[in-house]
Image (cartoon, rainbow, N blue to C red; front, side, top):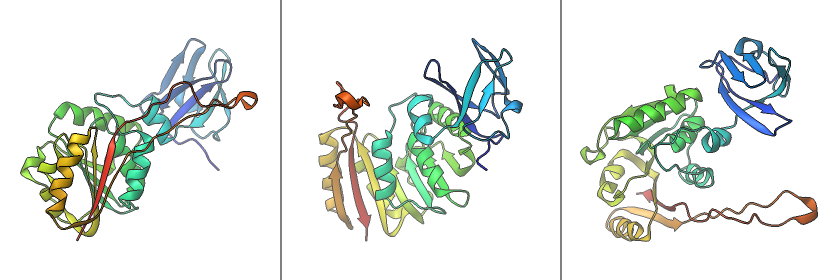
Length: 256
């Protein structure tokens, strides 16, 4: 049975208004709405897709909050995030698997961290280096709402000092000047494993490629991912009027 657990983050869906509310049951024992209060204890044990009513009798559907839902609509942002369209490719290209040890810098608001932590599972580990303490606090708070914070070790440190690890299954850099830290990433990686880098500008790509050319990396790839949504009206199927185009450039390379 696909039932609600006390540590879950759920969606209360108001069908009348087509509106979603994201609630972590462990952190919010009572959820107040204009239509009344829902007690978390009355939700635990229900099958997902069931209806729950406030104390005034107003109905909501209880749905599981997906990682995509949380990142796009509930994540508390102090920084620009890695969007799902990029995050999915990053995780696949870096070959992130259950049980892996992943190093990243920086933690940002925790979006990419959450994706890594979700995939590595209970036997894996995400080690995140971040020099700004307020970013760490916010990201860990976001991860806690997803029940993923115990899979993440956050180190409040500038990566100019290097990484402590030398056996990482993947390294991901989301920093302003990644070319300065590629040697550190190389030493942290297992042989044959992947380095991923995210940058917003072409200028940063050029400097990064110049550094990679002078180091023992192969399978170098540069790309960006564009995503276009369509209006969900069968009689008038067409693209949305606006398209969020460029979000980031992605660079990948394999250690040899």
